[in-house]
Length: 569
Image (cartoon, rainbow, N blue to C red):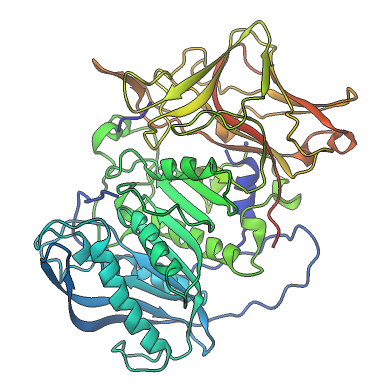
């Protein structure tokens, strides 16, 4: 229950995957610039292709721009004076380049028109510009302040960005808009991506609405770091690739709202674009922005966990965001490498138990469009989409659909604590009391036959608060595929598979609730079909069976089980 590139490392993590009301609590300056530059590494291609030579870039121009005074006239009649400014990264060369807008969060300020949290992402601006992205970190302090009345939804942000975009477009046409550097012909407005931190994770939604309403612009992708979910958007989340990073020890957005955004998008039957979520162990909220000083991970429930996990340094955390952003943007480009999302034979050579990304431990959740579900219980406020699934347990296995909710009298999970503080997330609780118990899931008629796909996926977590999981003994099991003619193929999970590892922590309790002191996140356990011995000989899939033959007892929470297809360029 809640408390209220394309790089081989990346793909290996996916192959196992798991196998903002943000007023930050600190202030001050931390000026750690990242050097050397972050570069996307090469991913083995899933099939032979002719790859064009990648353009290389030198050291970009970094410009602290000031376009002069402006004023926001609110619907209430209140006026908000502010200065149009930000931080700009211009790649070397003369060609038109994709555009990235970066938005900072709502943080402590002494004077909103002089404090510069946009400069806290100078490192990210530089790293992206080094890879050929025309990058703009926008000062949006005026959106958040209360000095001139209460901010109403995204009224101020829209006004700020309309002014910024007007000047930006003029500069791209060759006019002198005040940037102090020529931008003529340098930005491709049909290739726009946005990155938001903290409460501005939500501003990525607002920016997406502005882009969709602008005939000159097209949105390619969205990245959110430690985002908050605050206002309800007037339009659905844009159907473009989305990447989300949630830090384990976020002392500001303590509920890790980015998880709820992921869970909401992953259940949309009409979604055609992939979504990635990374649960970053040892990370906090503040370190993504170099203008925020000090650890915020001792606030709230996380103070119980001071000695459980080694913390990332500020530079490590920023390097992670830069690396992730570079690889994500590479993947969403036209003809970009889909290895960011897909599983390849080369990438799983180390097995599905690799839980590292850019050198740091993570849990990974990934939704790919076209996934066919064998069972699906994970619904935030909804019942399972498909009520026809048949799930048959053996005598020693107990099943129960339970609701994970931040509302105490509606939560049925005990101490289980999925991030995001879901209001109503339906899960399948699986508990066994004897080694060898089994759970059989019959393939629904909707599954495409013969079996087609790249991997079997389970959205799953060990229930760290359940006493059936012996301390230090991570639950594991064997997965068996059976076809309609009786053919079988199996794969046994290693005991240290990240998705089913017990999370360090302890059970806390008060007069209203009990909960695990750290989060117990569901994540995507992805087992490539090639890992199942003899899977290529199987006919039409009849069932998937989980046999709990690795531990004497155990407890899991399962959101869904599906057959995943690879993305194609």
